[in-house]
Image (spheres, rainbow, N blue to C red):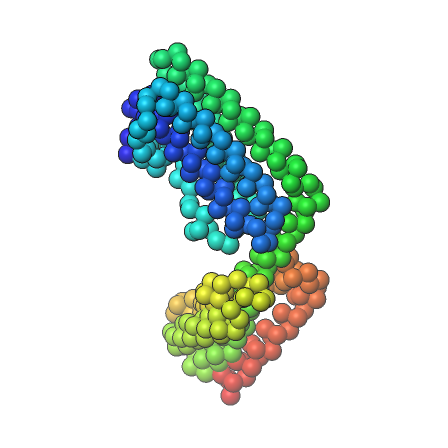
Amino acid sequence: MRNFSELSEREVLALAIANEEEDGRIYADIAEGLRQDYPASANVFTEMAGEESDHRRRLIELYQEKFGEHIPLIRRHDIRGFIQHKPVWQIQPLRLDSVRELAESMETETKRFYRRAASRSEDASIRKLLGDLAEAEAVHEQRADQIVEENLPANVRAGEDAHARRIFVLRVIQPGLAGLMDGSVSTLAPVFAAAFATGQSWNAFLVGIAASIGAGISMAFAEALSDNGSLTGRGAPVIRGAITGLMTTLGGIGHTLPFLIPDFWTATTLAIAVVVVELAVISWVRWKYMDTPPFSAAVQVGFGGALVFAAGYLIGSS
């Protein structure tokens, strides 16, 4: 990588051309990724891609006038100091807040790049050119705001944000909550049954680890194979399965780890305290994202956990 200060004025202009082309393609990719679920936002990014194309055309014309036809390939990731943005295809599914933040950071960075380049240029005509580009980028930033206002009035933005929240709940919260509930509740019986049957922390720990990992694998496959997401909109089955399996394993391991403590009653007391925390987290998630009244969520989750714990205690003590 090279430092920005080492670039010649010809190389700076070549870099600017590459930046505008890359930004335009990023905006086009974002528009395509949003079009099905968020058509108004997709229109915003389509128009911004058009603005970038116009900037690139102006840059090429000015470059040809100054330096001829050949434009060397210099990209932002070859220069130190630029923000490294993930390709759009790596951040699927797209979220409105994340792509808006991405667009804002791209515009701010490009404007700063042009102003810095203009400040270090010794050629008066190049300095004027880069200054004009900085101003053009500032105008582009204002134009982006206008595009947003034209395509995303408050009611449309609120509707798309609400839709984004529903998609997040459907694709992340629901499979994660199902896994957490299964891991936190269903593993109580085998863990505490083993604990009270043997009176040894290590045996309870081994059973808990086996139950947590086994349940995580089982729930991951069950979730991934239950629905391919094509009709329900629940997203990629592999991602849902991974979320469910991971949360199932974490839910079981949480109250299993205390049994690493050699003293049986200390380990058991701490494990019970962890169970209470796990059930409280589940109740909070159900209240926060599933619109369940807090008292009702606490009673439902607590009652189910108490039943499973009682089953484990009775079986282990028999």
